[in-house]
Image 1: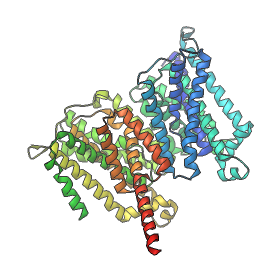
Image 2 (image 1 turned 120 degrees about the horizontal axis):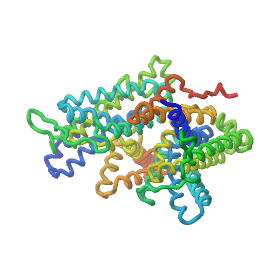
Image 3 (image 1 turned 90 degrees about the vertical axis):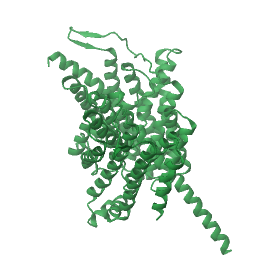
Image 4 (image 1 turned 135 degrees about the horizontal axis):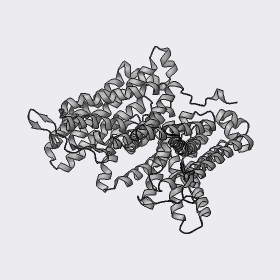
Length: 292
Length: 313
């Protein structure tokens, strides 16, 4: 366990943790404003990567990114408009809403498989792909730095937006008391549509960060999706900070376990951590009381 | 009485139909019915979101399968081991979970479901990983090998025992406690019901039934592979339950039968089958929110109401 290997674990653990944190944030913005756990978040990440592969041969890179993220976000908003809004407006029971969310997830995943095939394609990242070397000890992919920077930027933007803009504030009000929010003139339909859109954008961005490290294909949304909601629960529903702390904690634990113990069961670790946190601290790592 | 007649009719099936394809179809249907009826119980009657049904099914299939193929354990001894070990897992997982409500239960069991498949795929030494296990020794009764029609009778017996068990629980004190806990946990607690224990009991019983279904599945196919634990299976069973009508046993039976037999005749690939179920699910959620069972009951009620209206005029 040399200093070099510890640094390397920190670098990759942070990288994995950032992806988890972004996915958790995308669940969080929807869950906190509407009380809905949208299972399909991982699929928006996947669709943005797959659309990227489709667009890249035809347009320059920045336009392909923008178009792919916009496409995935559009589908997220469409799913809210077509299904969730109708179900909520007639006060459908929770069971109907949850199964519809599952339905949306399944249709997004296997619809992509039907339309784009079941192969996996490489997706180039926005940065160069040569490895950066630090004093012959530590190796970094430029994509890693892109992931760090984007994660910080997205969290800062969401936090600022929630505190400063009218729409962001109405999101927080709707989270605390939906009926009271309506009384003071907050349009819950608008809040819900916005929350689904914002969650969609964040997931789509996470997909663009994640896919260059692996590949783009119809199944790549599954793991980020599952880890995302596990992290949201681990971190707690009190603030976006919970998602960040939870994501980085899980990322570091997983990478360290894979490196020093065994890569065999590192996937199962997420579940063990989840059960442990729920047992000891059901409100999550960052609870409501700790928020200033 | 109804039960006996129904059971006898179903038991006579292999006398008339000897085509192996139809026998396989019926064994599959029996296994799926055990799964959807128990899912209907834990979700509909007990009001708990369990998404780990495929994990429990898979564990119930893998424990006796691995023991029989690697350690030569008799398949019949595998049955109690399968049900007990799965129930123990469900208890361990359930203990912290039953204190939680709504989405939390869904999240934990979903996570368990996803990770169970990954673990089975990675523990190659024990489970054969992605290739699974083949050539599991079959079941014998007094030297007679159970297969085809005789295996169908075993699957049918498992189905009948499961549905009788669920039916009896529903009518028992425990069943009333389960429903009371679902409808109003605080009121149920104030009546002296141990809310946590009642929820855990319902959760563990259905996990045990899923394991029974897994055991039946293993010794029919005599092979195992990790897709048995795929969460997509859990979603399919949910769709069957919901499209049939959550909480209505005839609805669930019809939903299960329709959705497991129709794709066979349409010859759909698994992916497209899941896709079609997802679309059907969304359609039902929008247009028939109580499922086919609920829609039929609703139509019947409207019909009766209209008939009564007419006769009073």
